[in-house]
Amino acid sequence: MNTKNEILLGQFIENRDELHQPDPKAISAILRAVERASERVHSVISRAGLADVLGAAGSENIQGEQVQKLDLFANDQFIESLESCNHIAAILSEENDEIISLNESGEYLFATDPLDGSSNIDVNISVGTIFSVFKRNQKGQPKKEEFHRHGYEQVVAGYVLYGTSTVLIYTCGNGVHAFTLEPSSGKFILTNEAIKTPQKGNIFSINEGNYKTLEKGIQNYIGYCKKLNDKGKRTHTARFMGSLVADFHRNLLKGGIFIYPATADAPKGRLRLLYECNPIAMIAEQAGGLATQGKERLLNIKAKEIHERTPFFTGSKVMMNKALSYLDE
Ligand code: AFP
Image (cartoon, rainbow, N blue to C red; front, side, top):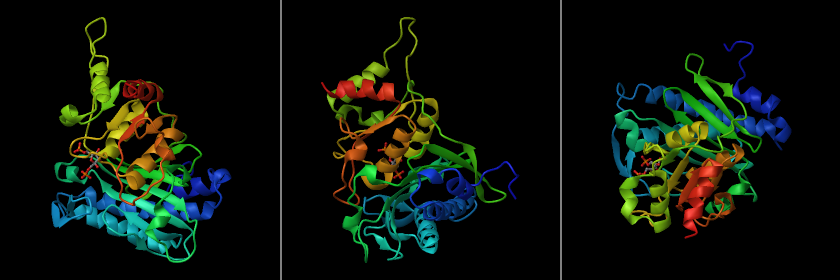
């Protein structure tokens, strides 16, 4: 039972965020479905070593990546939970080649990476769920082309970070709000309202294993981050966990920049536009940061394929403008 001053996720949407919602009851129902699925994923992840849920499931997803057992478990939880909320017409998931139709009468579309960073599961590093919601612009049986939308059309964007605690972060375009899971009740409780990311920061997050395959401007920006100050001390610090949600969340709160550009292994970038970059970009902007594909605002991109990838830059405004100034070269 939550104490009187604890605000639950559903209450917050319907009582505090509703001024900015065309349909607060539906949005609240969708986020409560995310809450239910996330709680179930949390309960298994927190006991991963004890239950037979670690390791590979023996299959590959459309990305050609080894699917982990927990990827499939998480995917099933979100599909089941969203089907029962009756507001979702179709789900686009990283784990499924095609979209999954749920309720044809549903007014919304849901895109998700149900378990991002899953290569970290077996080594006990934080993983996350990323999700994005669009309002339908067609009736009838959903088709994958209905997901070919601009990022700025999202009505809800969020992620769940299964870390030292499990936090759910979302925005409906009225600021970024954080809720922390109280494991004993299985409920997410408001812990940080209207998060604003620092305008400046000194954390840069990029996989330097790709350094030699990066465009010159990005190499030069990395060189800038490694410069010493006039006292011979470092000016920046490098942090890269291989888990987008964990890297982004740290930079959101402390200030920083995350870059996953085009590389030799991923000439279009590695991260997916619709269910990784779009939601993170909406949160970044709502918190006062920036998110681009390179020079172009990421949310201005219109998806052409449901699993398309994109180069991704996001973070504190001052750091982003500095990084982008190197790209003009
Ligand atoms: P997995 O879900 O396959 O672990 O990939 C995680 C991810 O999509 C993203 O969370 C990381 O930032 C990025 O990949 C790391 O990619 P590299 O291993 O190529 O640096």
